[in-house]
Length: 180
Image (cartoon, rainbow, N blue to C red; front, side, top):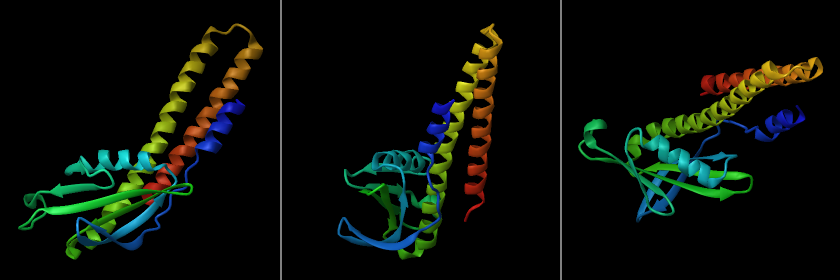
């Protein structure tokens, strides 16, 4: 049981809505945009962005940054919209920049970075919930097969602990969903 409690303590991530205006030069363009920080490592954020961006565009990995082109027919404009992102390592996690070459889309960029941040944290908590449910199912099978009452009580206690952790994680997700 101690293993599960320690697992939850070490697994905690801190979601916040802190977003800062930022500028970055890429491909000879001065991009206005926003940056935020994650307590995930750089590669996890890059992978999360790639999966997120595939829902609306085709992310192109440019080695040090991603470039996503959204066709003009989906942006109500005459030209394609280009989004640039860059993820860098920082102490305790990573920093993520999202910018657009056209300032007209700054507010959408801000909404997008917030939505992405919510998405990556919610996905993380869902993974933790799934792990705990699977572990609880395994313990349930052990409980049914166990003949010793003392062992059954111990297994049941572990199942209850996992259920409490799942509820705690669900509440974390609800809090993230309500945040702006």
